Image 1 (cartoon, helix red, strand yellow):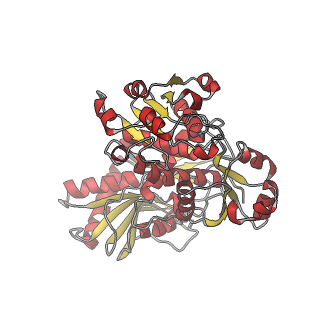
Image 2: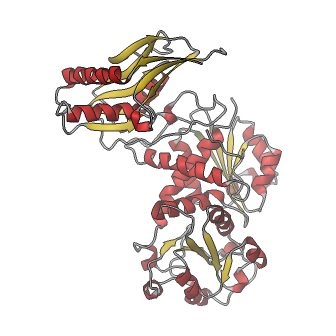
Length: 182
Length: 309
């Protein structure tokens, strides 16, 4: 299995800072904005963005939540194993808010579609944007595009993109994995 | 990823500890769902479920129906008093006729022990046992254990006494299996006539003195006396039963610790527990009801995910 590093520790740090600046450009003091990490992997990214925005950009009172989309997915009963959920933690209403979905990798767009459905359970947002660390372009199954992108990559279906965080015990990096038997 | 080891939920006896834990962790997610402003998810939108109640029920039937609707399943209801069963149709015929209408799952309560297992072997559908006579009531046991886990953090090591009509109670049998699998110590307490002879072989403690049982336990699960199943007189009078086995505020205050009171409902106030106990802070009876919906959503979701397309 071949592996290529797309973003190393330092590049990832710069990318996160750029994403924070782009968010500030559009949302200023985040008074009417909420950041929602999509479970399971978007949780790490949204926490990291929150930390940077609070410490380095002095944005206090950020509203941050985690949304699990399992029960809204469109592949129920189409897999061998049941789809198991993660925790949803949204302690605010999104009614009238500007919502930014945060996820690590955008691939087919199906989880984002599920998230668009799922977030309605917490009210009607004013608008919804999408921030992703990696955009695997040309592999979308649905008409969904990100508003903020860390890095765009061209991949084929047999390849995988993995995002590792130091919170999980390793180091911060983004890799492209090639499986040879496909 | 984990999966249930069974295709039907017939009883606690034939499921594993891993199954119970999977149902609990899934119920945690559903408990969050039913506390959202919009309490509904679309997971089971292409599943049809028939609720067949050949015996009276309020709580269980409403709880299952609500769980099914919160999962967006299509629901049809049936109760035997208003059906062709009274015209002499057999159980298999009744169910096969319902399944001919393209039903994917059956939730059934039936007065005969083993009815759910019998059905699972004879019809092509997923079966959830909602109580079969004096045999098992798996979702009740799961929600009872889940409520204990919610209050105490874990079930293992807890001491639970089940008080009352053990002989006729499916809740007692399912609870014993479930709590033991989770590592709790179980005692049964009641008049000797209402304790089945084989109960010791299940590995539970047996006590006929209520005060001693309450002093031993952390949690007391109070059962109703099932008059409808009793063909004999098992005790002289309800008043005498209430005096010997009814839990009152005075008894609870005489104990040197605060124990938790549970009840699967329906309560006969003034018999197995008095009103002031049922409505006190020590009782988690209404939490049990709330958790019932989450547990049933979890069980239905996990079973439905095994239905092939």
